[in-house]
Length: 310
Image (tube, rainbow, N blue to C red; front, side, top):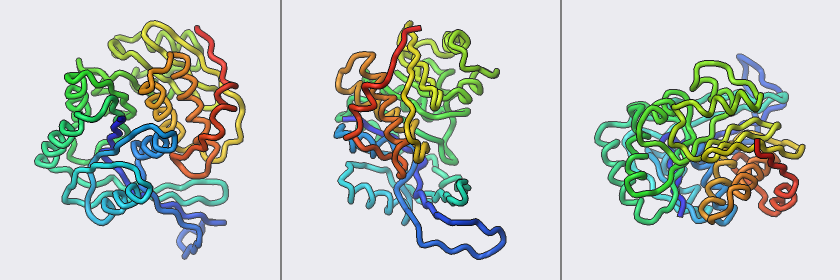
């Protein structure tokens, strides 16, 4: 069983408009409301790939109940921890080929709720073999909270994939309890190191040799349409992917994480894990809905991926 952790989930609302009129009334009949957040994108993709998964995180109020109901309706196993404040909305307005987003910061998590979730999390550990932490930290959550949860996993010898950014990721990397895998894109890698890292293979390899990454077995560096650079232990792989018809790239990084988690949990080889992760990312980009893949297209894309040890 794979456990996905989304501490700051949302109800993702999408409005599609032919044109966005500022300071005027805009009407639409094209509305989508889904259980959102990076970890829930991972969850849906794992479920679609027939990988056993359970989702957890904080849930509050009517919107938290909506997320739980949405997952239950899809028969996706979940066990969220209740909080007093309301879960957030995240709104995307699709207009004239553009996407304008309004993202709420989310609820404030109290000290009692933080402690309660840790106990809840520890209880879930009995049935999982891999944990995925995804996304931002809501207000009230200390920056070292992910590190505290990773410590619990490491103590139980349960590998962790951490997919976050900013100070949350930097704090994780500064601690002695490291995750098993991380997946920064090139901008996030540059932010971590404090200088701009280009797509030059040698430069990226040197960047990943920084002491901050010591103890992390897997590092996936996303390069968008140019594939990825993957570090596994002391080996480096450049992944070249085929050209695809991109419909919606949002959530492709989450799908990549799901692919990695799925393949790793099935004891696949290093090359199989890398190819599966990248294939899932492409499959997501080919669908309109975020956190969605058509598994029937898997084999065709998987066979086109080229991996070079560098």
